[in-house]
Image (cartoon, rainbow, N blue to C red):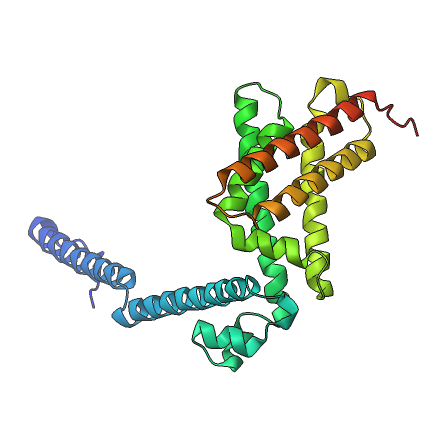
Length: 261
């Protein structure tokens, strides 16, 4: 411990006090510097804990996705309502009790599959709208159909699941599909509102039109996912017919008198 002297000791004494003060300050500075460095150092045990937590989270995410993937594989063969929890967990490589760390029930698995599939589709349509906006172009039904066909071909299992379970036996899944299709219709209604001829249409009429387009598209997807990929002629014919249906729908919309309520 250092004591500071305030007694004047003459020139020589002042120098000694000055040197002693500098020495004390130096020691104190080193002490504080050492303390600062020690607080910044991360303990190896903390680093191992962080790595362990990260690894557990990644493993949990992989297991959850495996449950979803195995469920999708099974619904390719039969209805969702006939699939048991034990079947899914066995194929995913976990014990049945571990299932509940990820989902509350099989119904929740079905709802998650619906939401994931439709979220991806809406994101693609949203990206398409941004691209058109950047080019100052107007969205068309043909472009939306092209996006839908690409998405359906890239994710046939998910779309087959949506088509089959729209009127299936699990009420939670049916409601989830209905909710997602309504969101899809509303986003299409936003596209329609950008068409000059429809700019004055009320929101309700635009949503009815969007709903009509979604119905036509979903019917096309239902046929598309059941087609043989090698039969390109049938696929081209299906797309041509669907485009014609959409054009007829648009012609009808052009003759429609918006409600004035």
